[in-house]
Figure: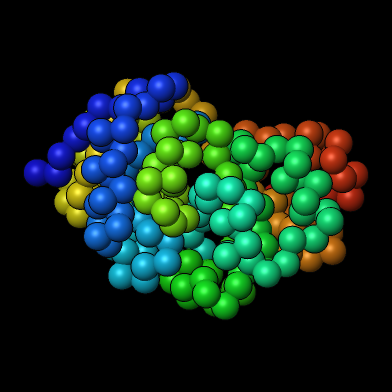
Length: 218
């Protein structure tokens, strides 16, 4: 049975995060708390580890897997183009629960981009995530810890029942309050487009750029 280690959301100790980073560096998969939901984490540069994440979620669609990054410097390894419009959203909402979709760099594994030529990235505000990113030394997948198409899960106990095999380490931050996922905004083209509604409202996005289009409307 995979190990579970408790972690403080506000002031995480290094011991569980160091172990989690070692699992990630070895090509393993972890479950960890973010500022919204629990995520499934793996090295975003490791195609084999990404394949494990997709298999755990029984994910057969062609949707890309979102990732979290430690800094804007790390973001530059994932995309070669950060437009002025994208930079405005970065300045307004990062670190935080806004995922921005960029044109993917050539280094991004196809299992992440799924042939779209784009990659969804955010810099989280969670102390757990930021320290984990620092220790792991790579961007991490941040797909929600549930079976694809099923409702979100809010505790490690629920996740263990839904995904009984394949996770190498669980970081248990307790039961997370019900929350929407991160908002996903496509900034790879000239007009910002909302691809998934979430924590950051359309109104807050429009305050940064009135030209935002909600593709989920209607």
